[in-house]
Image (tube, rainbow, N blue to C red):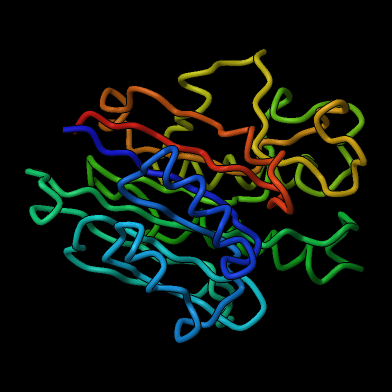
Length: 271
């Protein structure tokens, strides 16, 4: 059985619902994990997604900001969500896929949206950056988002850090730019290690190959400049690594009309 799972920071699900539908019809993922939906749960366009084949939704949304959702062609065995840093920001949702999805052994999927952190990489003068660092520390310490002996776990989403030298267009020029500073990289790597996760995208496509999932709106010609960053991630429990056959970055979506600045990342599993 093949299982396709997509992560995408859509940057407003209602504004970009037609683009999401375009992607779904082409890629046909079984599970679609969105971040930055910017939509309270009671305003989420569920009817449209049901027409597209996604009968099941686990939502954690809020008005105008943040928001995460898991949409699925299959029922969930269970769902859960948690806050971070003592706040009610909608930044985490998890689901368990099991027998109702045709799986003999269940798969846990965590969908996360890490704070962006603002523009100034100094926690003493920028509370947004301080929040981001605290969030990454909590990811490191939170057993709820660790593998925890579950051989079939996935953590994915917009983690808002490009941790490796070749995850950005210029390592030297971005060392003091939020998303690639040494302290962010250190904390994301610590969270990955403490959680028992494998960076699946880099296992399949090792450095020095460049990998990007985000291109700034500030660039007048993003494609020609190609100054991207890998902010969206797919982390797997080690035992799932031999089950992932492909991970695709849908770069073409950045060139659609009124796009998100992030593009979909889709993993295909042989489960």
